Amino acid sequence: MPKESVPAAADTETRATSEHAPDLRLWLRTLACTNMIESHIRSRLRSEFDITLPRFDLMAQLERSPQGLKMGELSKRMMVTGGNVTGITDQLVAEGLVVREDSPKDRRAYIVKLTPEGRRSFRKMAEAHEEWVVELFGGMDEKQRGQLYELLAVLKSSASRATEKHRPR
Amino acid sequence: MPKESVPAAADTETRATSEHAPDLRLWLRTLACTNMIESHIRSRLRSEFDITLPRFDLMAQLERSPQGLKMGELSKRMMVTGGNVTGITDQLVAEGLVVREDSPKDRRAYIVKLTPEGRRSFRKMAEAHEEWVVELFGGMDEKQRGQLYELLAVLKSSASRATEKHRPR
DNA sequence: ATGGAAATATCGATGCCTAAAGTATCAAAA
DNA sequence: TTTTGATACTTTAGGCATCGATATTTCCAT
Image 1 (cartoon, rainbow over the protein chains, first blue to last red):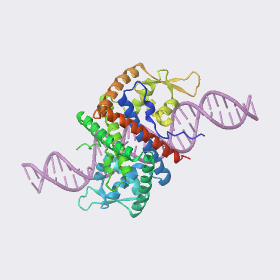
Image 2: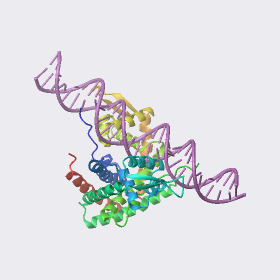
Image 3: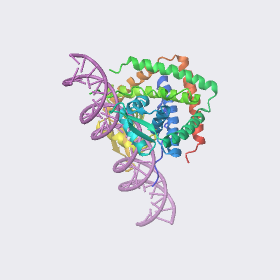
Image 4: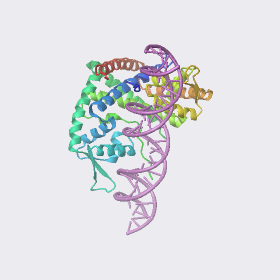
């Protein structure tokens, strides 16, 4: 039985048509780039390290905070809800990459830490991850990357302002 | 009991630290912009039209193909797997926005079409959606938007080449 | 002190997404 | 005609994400 063909790179830009406003085309192109890159990274994390992006992200937070983090702090830093962190942490604990320790100060809370194996494992993955990103952006020259970086800052504050205006009740 | 605080805009850029390679910071900023915009759009689709982005996207495909599309065609155009399209279509059928008709030519296949109500509903949503995007990019001037559009084309082909090199067996 | 509000984490329900396996149909070769 | 392989779709299992509810603990105003 034939394996399902996979959406390799999620080129959302194909949604654009000539009738679309220029801003819409710009947005769809932005989305297409992000999807392509993120999907490539997900797929290599999976094929080369057998890990998912959310788990990698959680470990990245812990690597930067060797003293460990409470579930709620992880949740804030990763910008995801608490219930989500519970599940991802469960998985990493089961894999022996992370431990939950009781907080000595607050019996409601846990302190999550990388295990030695988790730390070792993460460092290898992070190195590869950075190389992939360098490859993905490697077709842009230094000046282009700088320009893009600046323009995205403008976009970010533009979008911030717009979302601000439409206040989340 | 306090309601769970929500990850409003997923600012992945906060993951960046000074030790990160410039390319990594650029990537995280790209991701941050996309997440912020996409999350805003999702949230407004939900609050103003009570619909999800995937359902909106599926309807957008059908709007552009008034003769209807087979499930497999939807899957290809939306760049998602077939099983996914099955689920989303089920929902839209239940809401009366879409119909599955038997293909007269091929008894394996369905033709999915917007219902009149689906079409009416989609047009209203699409108009609002476009306005939101215009607002979100409104803080950039014409020249900046043009530059961004061009730079993203460079990035897209750069990323394409990189993913090409690392051939998905 | 103590009673209520806030904080910490978990759980259950729901939705989107993939990969893999299963069913039905089609088309063409043996 | 029968078989064979490809195609169209569904189903199942697993992961990630949200939301809302709940249990426990802590904090604070009285």
